[in-house]
Length: 75
Image 1 (tube, rainbow, N blue to C red):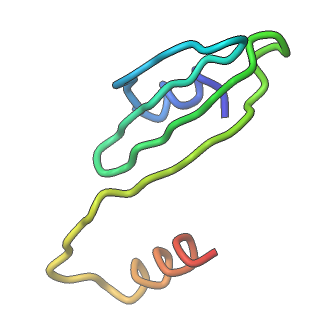
Image 2 (cartoon, one colour; image 1 turned 45 degrees about the vertical axis):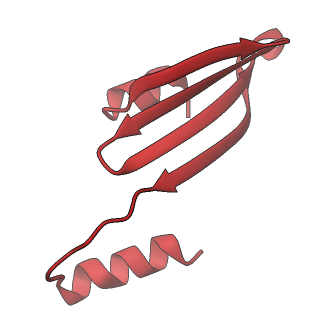
């Protein structure tokens, strides 16, 4: 994903820093935090990406949503 794709999905930058030829952005959208590092010397190719999901408590969940979450989170 590119910086603009993350922005279009509603992820806002909460921290950004450069180091050597790299740029790292930490973005948040609700309970999802995504930290991506790009290489500025290689047309901003993605070097690494970490996705963190905050603790979320759901009082109820339907079977379809539970199956969907299970499939995504247990890859």
